Amino acid sequence: MSAGARQTQLEMPGMPRRLFSATPSKLATFADCPRRYRYAYVDRPTPPKGPAWAHNTVGAAVHAALRSWWDLPVERRTAAAARQLLYSAWSNNGFRDAEQSGRWRAKAAGWLTDYVSGLDPTDEPIGTERTVGATTDRLALSGRVDRIDLRGDELVIVDYKTGRVPSTDDEARGSPALAAYVLGARRTLRKPCTRVELHHLPSGTVASFEHTDRSLANHVRRAEDIAVDITAATQAMDAGTSPDDAFPAAPGRQCSWCDFRPSCPTGQAAAPARETWSFLAEDDADS
Image (cartoon, rainbow, N blue to C red; front, side, top):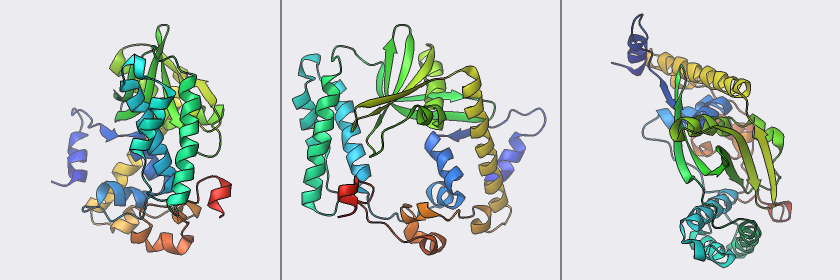
């Protein structure tokens, strides 16, 4: 039985509706480009991806260092330890050369030093890299949160950012992922949760938003709409529509850095490829 037939069967009158299992990343991928969603989540084997990106290397190393820092005994949670953890997690993937990689490792170490110096090492988070989940009428949502704090009687969602542009309160408000984490933290940890924060390490700034039932409902509605579109596309392909027609490409500037660019002629024709270090700060991206 095809996936589309199973979905139809499970939605017959009197039958419970099958929930669509999704992560914020999965939903965002389809919203950005249905073709990229197909490559990532439908096609098997998955088409080969392009090269690694330097800015992702930076972000991954910083996230890994912070997660491991909280795993240390309290007395070892120092700035020096954070730097050492970063060095251990670092790689040269995506950088132009070893010299550029070394300069960015030093920059990231400086961010970490400043950031952990402002943390109370005894203030244990409720979770780091914690997976949470929630259900809606149509969705089984799950996601992994960088950090969950307990402040007073309420949970706070903390997301680390390392991009070159500081985060904004509007970004915190509009993030589907942060909204999903709020719902997941409430259900998984059984505590109130409304506040989300974006901690931008390069600038040392914090952007935040306090969710309401209405703002969360708006995010849920948009997520469910995307899930409906994904299900329709999958059913169309199961019924014989060509994969390219069921999951059309959405060409644009983003094709320059799509992971699946090597497998997508439409994307290759839409925009020239970018250098893998081009999302670093301007002084490196242009040199």
